[in-house]
Length: 377
Image 1 (spheres, helix red, strand yellow):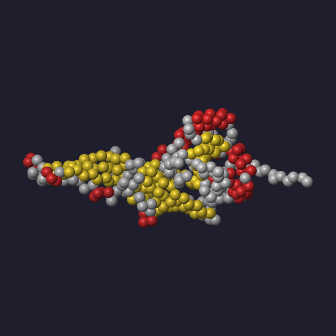
Image 2: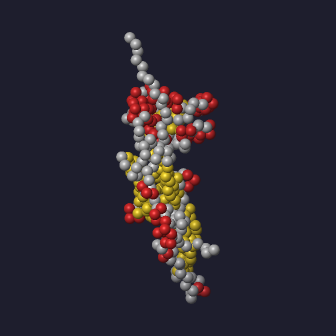
């Protein structure tokens, strides 16, 4: 009797790093027989201690963690010794401590990197740490071929069908998920009047009087005041699928930690009408939402991208701002959440107010938006 064999398909890499993480979760859930317990670590923008996917494999008593390498131009990614050292150190802070730490990468096999992993593995275990393993794309492709559930899910349902797929990226300060608004910190010192000051009454300038009149920053300005409390970030939408996106729009919904929002369209009243036909971004203050609508409803073809800038002012004292995003298109929609860390900077100023008694002497601190007036040239 002749044995039957399955023709092995050439298994290519996923189109984006999000799908690679999902593939690792699916594959190792099957390999470790823990598909209901394996999880992705946290959400986008949160510290992950070097671990993207984690679980306790069947028969084990401690956690195993996976680092899915290659999030920047990941299909051409190549592991370096510096990256390996950094991620190993990060993984040491994962709680509870790991028993095994695995690098999964879409990079091709590299004998020098594999040798370095073996050295770091022995070194780490001799110091009482976790085991370190590396699986390159060829290893992962073999695992996919050997595990039926993952094979059917990835090859038959994901890889070889026409599909919608997108990669959504956000960039704040230095391309990180961080923004640095600048506020003014006013210290008011209440001091008892000296005899010489009895006839001199110094008043405090009412800072809030002009804040509501400050126009938000647009690309072309439109105001003689600059509000340094505005934060900006870029949104990149990339069609990584094999199907054209038609009738599509992109929405950003800001959480309650945001005071104001603005798009990147001009605030210059003289340019507004002339440029309005080229407008693609629209801020809706009442809904705390920004809409990106492509010019003339132009489709987003495969491998093409769109990028736009958004602005917001966080509430004073906020440590983070979460933004829910939603992509709506014909026959396709996708949504997610991005979180920016707030790292405020302060411009310090001091005011003096006079009081009549020693008991009223004190100091008060007020934090407001930092607004400067442009100097005329």
